[in-house]
Image 1 (cartoon, one colour):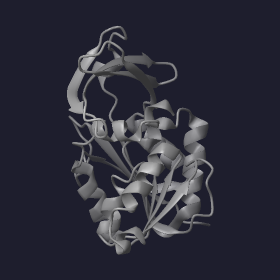
Image 2 (cartoon, one colour):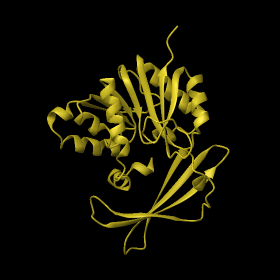
Image 3 (tube, rainbow, N blue to C red):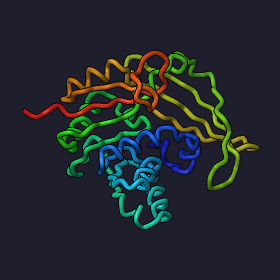
Image 4 (cartoon, rainbow, N blue to C red):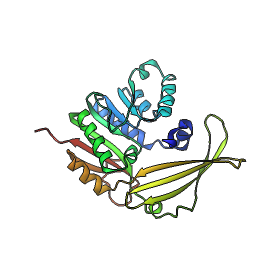
Length: 254
């Protein structure tokens, strides 16, 4: 995907996002590991898990992101590096990864599953890899009316940031275009180096998964004890919620 071709730029865009990491680390500690992490990217969550003493199988489809993860693994102590197994693969099709008491799909990676068949294929892989008492945990943003109803021609300015390799200041604007029939939101991000006229336009296409839809889908696809929690807390998702954190266990066999 074009959005992940410049892995360093992508990571810089979300460099302030850390509040979810402690949540996932605590879940991993409770599970005892190992953890299967889908959408591991450049290791934002992966490395935190490994530093906490948890073995991780990190799966991602993007080679540029995995290259950056490999670079980062080369900079950590050998004991931390030994806890991480990196696998390039598609979350819908990659099999035979092992059995795990905790499977994570972090930072809205399920937003890349753009239709029902994609989600069903992903959940089938999860069922294959969960231990009998294991748990799947993934996060999605609660669809925002401001984004879904936005004028696609109206730019929204994001805070500027410094590119991690060039050191140049980057200005970012976003445009939102929602297809209500397909439930797909296109976020067109434009990056421009300060003082220059040329810019880079990078589209990001995300399926909008609604809370009741996820609850029904997980139940239908063989999961039980489905819970929707609010914003990386142990509180139920009620009222004003930004991120929905879904927990589900595999329905017992037989």
